[in-house]
Image (tube, rainbow, N blue to C red; front, side):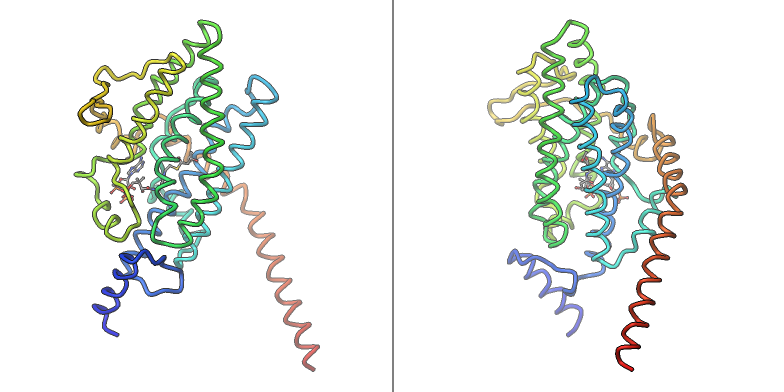
Length: 319
Ligand code: 3HC
């Protein structure tokens, strides 16, 4: 069948809401776009463990430490899940990780900000995981089967992440004046970088138009950002915190909040590697890769030995 006919049949499947599976024919550009997005999603999960991991030994109680440990472990699992989804498209996990460590692949800008106080852990759960949920619930309906199914599992854990973060902020906001000030300071520092997680404006987005046509994306960057603001502002007000945006105002006519302009210079500066923690994050991931080399070698040696033994046994049985 001609490529033109294959592409036509592929788009008909997408339009008919038929999931694309690993063994199905797909345009190279679809495959490439998915490997790009899924691998960067996986990198984000793994790098995202670092800012929070910084507070596991400093958590204010055993309960908070246990919850934070569970959350950070969940993020590792999300990363592995997503690397596996990328591998179903023919990508090699080692190549994907090398692209991250060599600075070729992106991960979410949000993880390049420092976690200065315990309230940051609350703000990350509430805002960062809250923004991630907005995006990931949409991705449970993405056209690529393995990605959509991975999202169903991940979203269940993300809602626990968001709730525990909001509970930290609620506890602080209802605490002493110093605790409330710490929560407000964290909101001030994490609000705008959280809005940046949704990516550039639709008009500046490289991939959105094609990703929407292929139903990789179901909602645009700006639609998801708006939904996040609409859902999160009332949550801040409920616990007596003030969103750091003088232009924030409910617009009855639109049925949404109007809000100020993002600092896109800051966004692209961070995406290009010049954020507060970019170097620290990649150095840590490179060290983890080097320190873990012996584990990978041992696992590979064991797998090869096991395969050789199985081959020998089947040879003996056949004889
Ligand atoms: N940080 C870094 N790079 C970003 C970015 C961000 N916040 N937003 C956009 N970009 C990059 C894109 O990757 C693209 O660069 P590339 O071509 O080199 O990949 C460029 O900016 C243009 O952006 P587009 O809007 O054209 O890119 P997309 O169509 O891919 O949309 C996205 C960006 C909405 C982030 C989309 O990639 C996506 O939905 N990804 C899956 C979800 C994800 O990765 N979330 C990140 C957070 S994960 C997380 O928070 C884990 C939680 O457990 C804490």
